[in-house]
Amino acid sequence: MKPHILYSFRRCPYAMRARLAIQSAGIQVELREIVLRDKAPEFVAASAKATVPVLIPAVGDMLEESIDIMRWALAQNDPDGWLCLQSAKMSDAENLIARGDDEFKANLDAYKYADRKAGEDGHAARDLGAVFLAGLNSILADSEYLFGGRITLADMAIAPFVRQFANVDRTWFDRQDWPDLHRWLTGFLASTKFLNIMIKYPKWQAGDPPTLFPEL
Image (cartoon, rainbow, N blue to C red):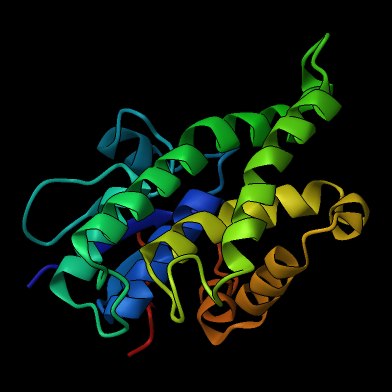
């Protein structure tokens, strides 16, 4: 049977969350590490959008959105119960993920790449992004994770983007009065789940021996 193929980039938060779900589900894929400044022609030919992650499953349609890849993996196997929320809570989780993907990600990009655009105010974008983060801190003040005492889809979908925001100016981030958010992010960064998806792989080129992820 032909393998599932995942085009990925190690440091992309979208690709991170796709790998997190695939790893949790225990579904093995052929991982093809893409260098964004020098994309493999086979990757560009496979996906018109040419941004990672892209999953080409052994059976079924190609998936080009990271949250769809997460759902695809967890629908097949969800041993950690990332999708095990009551319907109302799942709706809340989906709404929180959507806010992270929309307003927070827009502010994150404006903050991180402010020096690339004339007239862009990185501090204003940072402060807008901080509103979302303060909200996460408030949620986490009442529970270990975003939706209770265990990890769910929301934690793993949002954490890679909080990591990216924190890394823009870690000194500033660490000074913010967000003790519960800091605790949550520190736990994520130290987790085996995160460390295992951040192993470095060489740039993929056609003809290379397949890189299998995760190693089952």
